[in-house]
Length: 168
Image 1: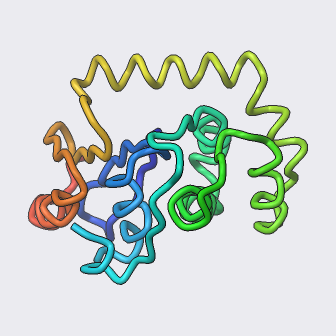
Image 2: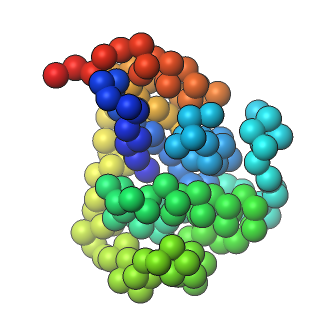
C-alpha cells in the first residue's frame, strides 16, 4: 500500500509504503501525519493479534480507492486499530463496513468497488511496482529515490526530506 504524505513545500514528498498486517507499519501509520520499539515509546496501545500476520487484501484495496482522498489517513489508522487493538479480522467486509460508515463513507459502494476486477488489478500492479522498486518489507518510505525501511527510519526520512529542496 502506498500513501504520499506531503511535507510543507518546498520540501519533497515522502512516499509511504505499508502493509496493514505489519506491526511496524502500525507504528508508522499511527504517527506519520503527526511527524512524531515500541508502542510504549510512542504512547500507543497494543493487543497481540490472535492471528499474525493477518491477511489484509481487502483493506489494501479500499486504501487504493482512497489514496488521494482526505479520509485515507483516518481509514488507515482505524484499520490498524481494528487489527492491533481490537483483534478483528480486517480482511472481512463485515469488519470494514462499520468502520467506513463511521467515517461517513459509502461502505457498500467502497466495498463493492474494492472487490471489483479493476481494483484487484490495481493492487497487483502496485505490488509489482513495489517489487520493481526494491521494496522488501513494510513500512518503507521514499524521499525521491532514497529508500528508508522500517518504522525506526521514519524520522530519518523526515529529516532527509527537510534538508532537500523539492526538485522542479
